[in-house]
Length: 537
Image 1 (tube, one colour):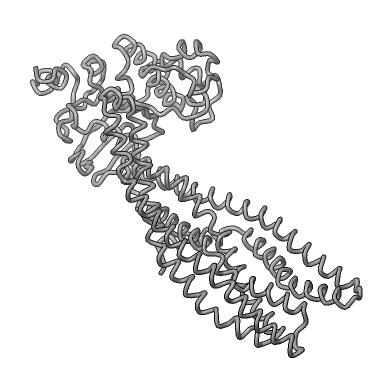
Image 2 (cartoon, helix red, strand yellow):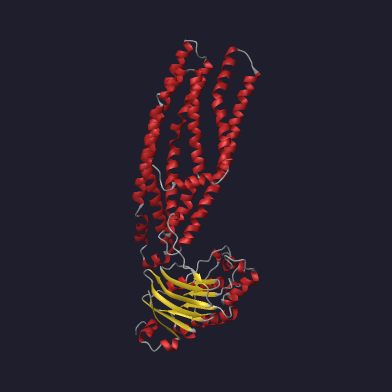
């Protein structure tokens, strides 16, 4: 039965020319393998007759060398194809996950599981399929070779073919559901584990480590059940296959014995017949590969689930000399918001928790789709977050992440963000690895701010990006930004009245709606506005 990921696997196979090289190499090696039993039989008959034929010996050596060299080349090609296919799948999947934006319906741990394990499994599809195709071709070639030796041998062997096919088919059917369940539960555990690691300090402070461990490991029984199901199915198929192969070999050997008695076959022919019987039953010995194929299909289905998720449409940005929103709505967050922020203005977005401030900042920065309305904005956007993820190997590269900024530009951005004095005191300065830098929350925020500044944006959006700074440092950062980015539009999400007081215009949100705009002094006359900063006291 076709699965949603089968089309993706087909695209993976046909995207590269290397599988054709692997197929060509496999054809040569398989041909050598099929001719080898006959050549070995001729050599045995030659030895038993007491004669020496150089051509027979050379032919045997050539076929053996062909198979050995072919196997070696096949291993190298298989590794290259798998690596390239895996990289291609991870690139597609990561791009789509990024395009889906945040929040995504795919939990972070689950997304990591799909990017690592599932892409790795699906990337091996070419090698897995090629292995099975070679086995099928070898089996068919072995039956033909047996028929050329003696049609009676082929007839005896053919009796086992329907039984072998039945074993193969039933194995795939019984394994499919367990393999998919195993992959899904693995992703669920990964998601829970990543959440627990991210919140380890909170868990420790609350003293609920045991309870959290139980939550993370709660899906383990389902994982164990799926794994046990796979092993039970595989064990059942393997002992059946283990009985079938010697039974078929014995039947062929008996038939070959009668051939010797009647003078139709030689001793070497019997040896060749046994070799072809083993090759012909190779498909039964590929039961583990069939399990791998089902795991590959299950992984591809999980990847396709992400790729088939439509990317939310980003609002079309209309040209403007500032920022203008008209009737913008985001389901569950913003409702019919219309506002104008003049070019070069400093705007503060305020509101109580859940008012929609971060969603508005994401819309202004182009990070969030809208369900309705239009947005007019011009120029690049620099974005800084409350808890920035410091990407890059070193602090300096983290500031310049995603840009071509040189050392001077990185340093100037750090100076503007009031973090340069901190960074030069690190063990290796700007070259200090991110993982080795002992940074406070405020220092990390300022590095995130420097990362936004180094992009030289037309619009700078700060989503609570100075929340961990003291009031004095925040004022210094504000003054430095005015100098470093003169004439740029700045939008700051804040909870501080001092920040709102410095703004040219305050955008006041309440329950996802625009409650009012104006200066901080103008809005301060409203009791509800004051409650935003005083908590209603």
